[in-house]
Length: 79
Image (tube, rainbow, N blue to C red; front, top):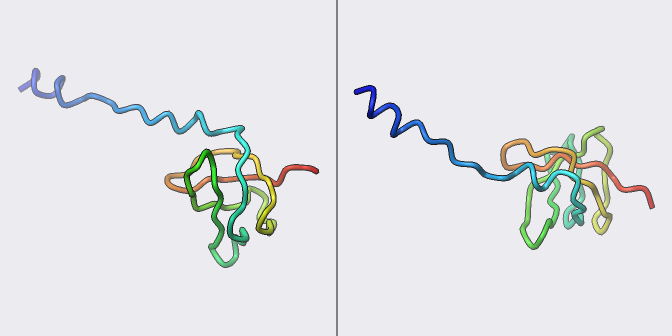
């Protein structure tokens, strides 16, 4: 039984932390109050929320601050 615990106790790395700091493009307006917003990051589409709660318009560039499950938490890039 202890041997079975050791075998089944493997962790699978996801490397999600590699996305932090990258630039993504907003493809659907980010609005935390409406729980809406999508971004494109490295060819993949993600749900997104703004870190400070501000609305971010479609077409803007954002920086990924952290990954929260299947959502990216982003902040607007300064032009």
